[in-house]
Amino acid sequence: MKNNEISKETVLVGISGGVDSAVCALKLKQAGYNVIGAMMKVYDGDIKTIANSCYGTDKKKEIEDAKKICEKIGIDFHLIDCAKEFDKFVFETFKNEYKNGRTPNPCVLCNPLIKFGIFPNKAQEQGIKFDKFATGHYARIEYNKELGKYLLKQGINQKKDQTYFLYKLTQDKLKNILFPLGNMEKEDVRQFAKENNLIVHDKQDSQDFYKGNYAEIIDAKEKKGNITHINGKILGTHNGIFNYTIGQRKGLKIAHPEPLYVTGFNLNKNEVIVGKKEHTYSNSLIAKDLNWTYFENSPKIIHANAKIRSAGQKSECTINIENNIAHVEFKEPQNAITPGQAVVFYQNDIVLGGGTIAQ
Image (cartoon, rainbow, N blue to C red):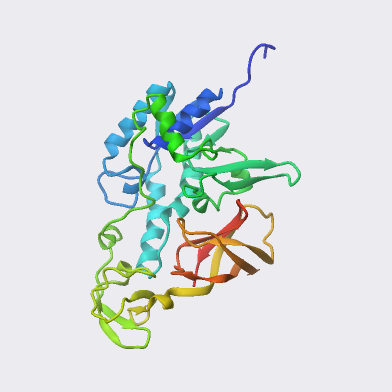
């Protein structure tokens, strides 16, 4: 290499057709990287799945928007087919969890397995060469020399922070990932897109996951059962446990002098259990399938903060770990702790790790 030549890293950017990924790609190009755009195809034909939420219901338009973004920025565009893998590893798990009375989060499943795994790997297999992989997530990655590790940190705008969905990313993956939007506010992202004439500057954000008729989506057969008060009194009937989630108030269709909420399920009796608001609170949970982003080996006890849902607040807790199972005790009671959802542990703005809520 000649002395006057600049060595540039090549970055593959996951393009979704939305404003965040568009700004991510343009920011990296302006920073001097060689940028390649790629869209992850996670649907097959017109089959209804939770993949609808990833790129909206008008998939052809999303692809066209992604192509136009890449043309505007001046980068190549590729469409990488991950539909079979998404169906196998994300959608099937999603369906099975719902059928068994749990409420899974497909984004938590998709990110480590598909978006940051199979997707870039397939791009490489197709001959696309790159050094780093980037997305428009609102999160930060910083290398700490003293610790000799990469830290996954919350985005500066904690209302838009997306680290809850990323706690399964390992050190091996973090070292090759870029999050250019981690230090930006959403309003600044849209303004930057507008100033640079990106057609998606005012495009509506996608949902976290599919919101619709789950019975249709998960191919579940209606199975009538009782809606039962925690005192044992039968108050009504339901058409399938999969239609309910812990903490739910609306849609119960039962008459009662005071508001009632779903507090749990009795799978053996096919019952939806309801009670007062106070009955949806708990001081503890058990989490399994743990992954540690920060620690090399699982610790035995941690004093930290935890989030039990993506839009929730961090709450102080003590975590005791044994045999890859976390027993979490909260300082203050938590509302609607939901099996199937993730619990993510933090130390200030650093992600320590997390797991799946079992009970």
